Length: 319
Image 1 (cartoon, rainbow, N blue to C red):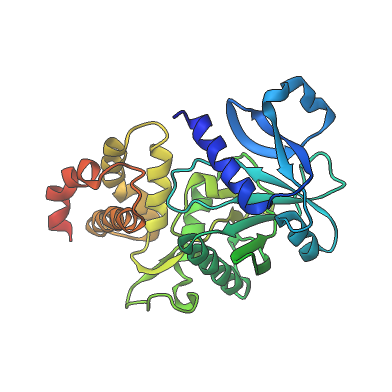
Image 2: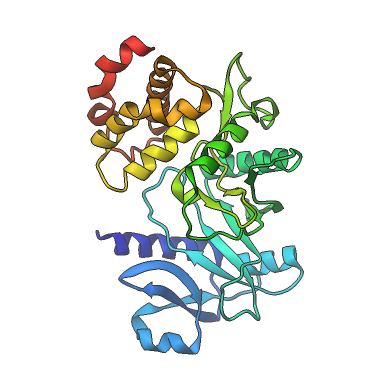
């Protein structure tokens, strides 16, 4: 099954979940095209140029996710659904909420995550608690979303977050390092139920990847997707995570993880780590990542035997 077919199959599952069957429907459009589906949006006139292939009927009964969000915001809402890859450990419906009068769908009122499984609910609740904790902290370097609403609809968690003014600009290395350091200092204020912070331990965002950060116009770093926030790790985990996932864009997991370990010393030098501490931190990070994938039951880098085991002989003396 192709990527497009997989995404469209999951999209129809999400539609059935968020829009219960109704006697009437409205047509939505898959953009930018059915062969590369990424968003399902309210249909407008110009979508006719895409042909009938991009049309998707969506029930518009009295009890949909849109009517629920309309109650949250106090006025009618139209949602734009993200057409996501189905094979993800943290898979869940993601959408943006727009005023029903906004036909451009460019300025969302909020971003919405739906906890439709036990795992998704746990991640959403953890993110909600994390963001509420961050709202009480005097953050200087990072800016995070605000929790606008967290409730239940049809037994599913619904988390609505404020939109951030994200741009496509790359974050300067100095800003990334400052953000990593500020996040690391948050360990003492972890959400309730988090692991206790051991002596010398630090906090980390948990998914500090290039697609979850963006420089703001005021000089701060916008950081979102806090589902994996955790504590009790060595300083520098987020810097290593950012480097690894940036490197994975141009090479496979085996070479990327090897590069992560090889570049650990200069990557972690801004945080005052010695060469031995930097290599030990990289070793701990890669093992922690493999453990996460194992607990998730999903291996996006492939089996750990292919990318972690080749490094084990080198890593063992560092631990």
